[in-house]
Structures are given as C-alpha cells and as structure tokens.
Length: 112
Image (cartoon, rainbow, N blue to C red; front, side, top):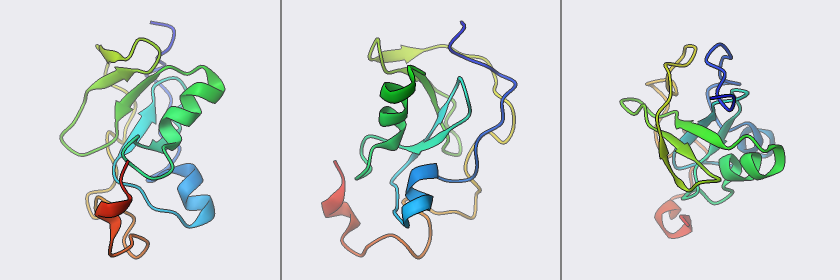
C-alpha cells in the first residue's frame, strides 16, 4: 500500500500541534505515511484526522501501548498494515490522557 511507509519514524512522543500550543490529548495516532503524531478524534483538537485531511495521508496507526491497529480515514474502516519503525507507541511513563501537567481536571467533559 503506497499510503504506508514502514521505514519512517514517529515525529515525537506526543501530538505535534498540541505540543506547539500547550494543549493536551486523549489518545495518539501515528500517520503511516510520514510519521506525524496527532491526537485522536476524541481529543479536543482532533489533529490526526486534520492532518489526514490536510495532507491526503489517509492511514493512521494507534500510537498507544498494546495497540497495533490501523485506520483508513478516507474509507472509514480498519485496514491491515505492516510493522512500522520504532518506537511503536508513546512513552510508557506518559499518561493517557496526556501529557502530564497539561490535562485539565474536567478533561472527561471536554472529549468529543
């Protein structure tokens, strides 16, 4: 599948855009084409799906520990994919929601 590059590493340990503005996320998703890490659609900012819409990079993989599923935003369904370059998930010491210190006390009320 040309929408997946298994050699590209993740862009970092957390959502790129949330980190730039001091935001927070619920769960993280990894772009399978370029490695961009964005927050999931339950997160307030929904950066992973926004990245997919802006770039045409349609496939993401969960960036959560213990999860290896892929999702196709265009087809709106799960898809199969290869093992991607390490690391496979966010740092284990980073909580979800995260990152530590930026999650509001009423975070459950802010989920989409």
